[in-house]
Length: 114
Length: 115
Image (cartoon, rainbow over all chains, first blue to last red; front, side, top):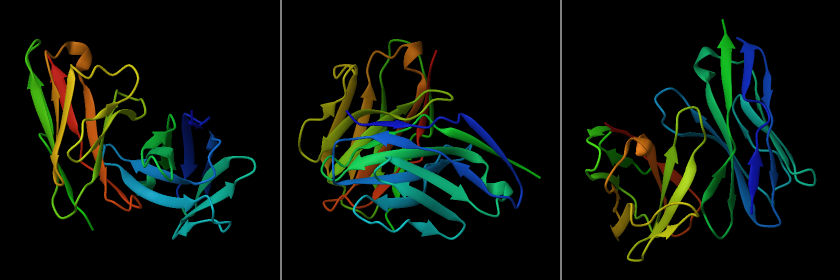
């Protein structure tokens, strides 16, 4: 079974600073996708960034980037120039290429300090 | 992009009654829909996967007779919590994907409180 582990229940960052959220996963599959989702207090799931396992290049979306280490099964999220609106629960998620269902980590609550 | 509408956003029901939650795709043909449950301060746990026109596949530990899932069309899936109990109180979220499976869309979620 696939598992996703987020070892940081809570993180905080000063506004305009950079923060990195950790995620590791375990799988025997070769075809899979990794995601970071943001869940603000509204509970709406918002896709932050997505990475295909077959791509060696790390995905980037504006201030958000990932460090994908396939051999180490690590998928960390870096948020640069943190903004107050970035405060939310962040979930790392895994999906196989065939099953199309998401397995979520336990989440990291990010606080942005003004 | 696709818009997913989940209804109701909030529902309170009495213990022992049944409640239905709808998940609609407004402009997307959803071949596969997923239902998740999220307890306070916890992660999303997959309850079941449903493909249009087929019976849902339930995750281990989820009672299929209690959580009835219907995916009768490419735009609608429903979750019915039967004989609800206070421990069923939770946040329920649907998500859907199309035939390519490359993009997943989430509903806004539904808060269920059983009193």
